[in-house]
Image (cartoon, rainbow, N blue to C red; front, side, top):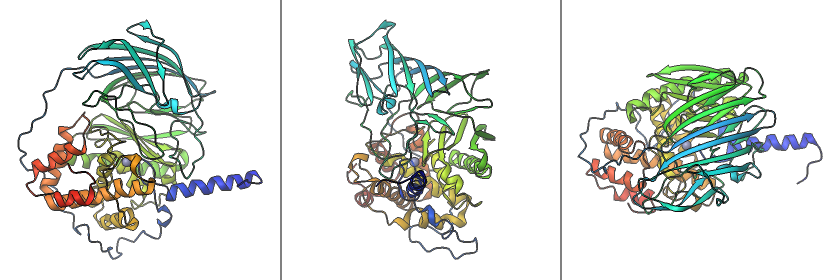
Length: 512
Ligand SMILES: [Zn+2]
């Protein structure tokens, strides 16, 4: 359909934006039925909604169960991959020149004939250009570019335990973040008038599977598909042609700022992301020794402060229940796109949630803030293959929302089930790869919503004590590693003697 004039085009854009915010399943966090917010908001005195799937009274959570000994493989002393990134970001033309040095040691017991690096900017037309590649300080021209990767066929196989140094000089032309479309995942990488987001902005070496292949997956229309090893990051950012009072929100706090040069160290992390804005206001708080900063636009002060309050509460709760938060800082970044999205040490929260904030915790601002906070345990601390087993982090984060309401706002626990889950009457097996769901709604219904129901039933079968012991043990056992559905079930079976076959059959396609 063609539109006659700009006004119609703008109306179309606004309509599409709201359509997506209200109805589209968003890859990190489902954002649905926001339009009924005021209708669904009962007063505290309102009669609780009857539901069959949750207890009415929050039960004190205790985790004293003794766990049988486990057979965790002996750690091999391989240094983490090390990334040094030096960036010159020019705000006026939205370009960046980047020198990247990666020091990598083959962690597997197989020789590597090639190294594949995941390169997300290659998925954007004319955004990524390589200027120079060196391997062990020698020029290397035989690199091969794929749709979303660089392949480096090595002259000599990289032996187990052998180290290699890669140097990649490249330039980025930051894409304009496109207007949202109903059939596409919202753009995050790129710029708008309000912010420029450097997410998955550098080539990185993905983990290796047990059979020695690289865990790189094709991009998809919804969901996430990248897999991250734990790595160390040293990042230097130079800002050029930026307005005064510009602010950078990043995965780490800067170790030094000198005029327009910002230096960061982010150790034992899944990734390093940053968002630049000439418009951010920042408010900071501390919880359990962790510095939490909320970056928001000036027209959303109340909501920006509320995101900070709820996030600090969530960190405190999740540290109690799941174990220590993995870093010393967390950035909450108001996003100029229609999504929430988790990264290591930083999460984005759509400005749409800030717009809809009504002064109560009964809404997406709080719900998605605590969801994204939970990803710091279920994604950052314990990672998973997001393409092949997306339920593993999303179900846990969605259920963590419930645990948050159950303990912090018990009067809204029933509301959460009705509003977030039951309304959609979710169905579907939860353990499919993102590629096997026929669309974003079946994907959301299964991995997020059925996933939360599955965990609630697992909890009721195990009992509170065993269930929360399971979560804490799971977080500790796979801290810094990549978990899997098989490992999840193995630990369930070690902690409980109850037969879980019926539950597995109900929610899972595979048997584990
Ligand atoms: Zn999520």
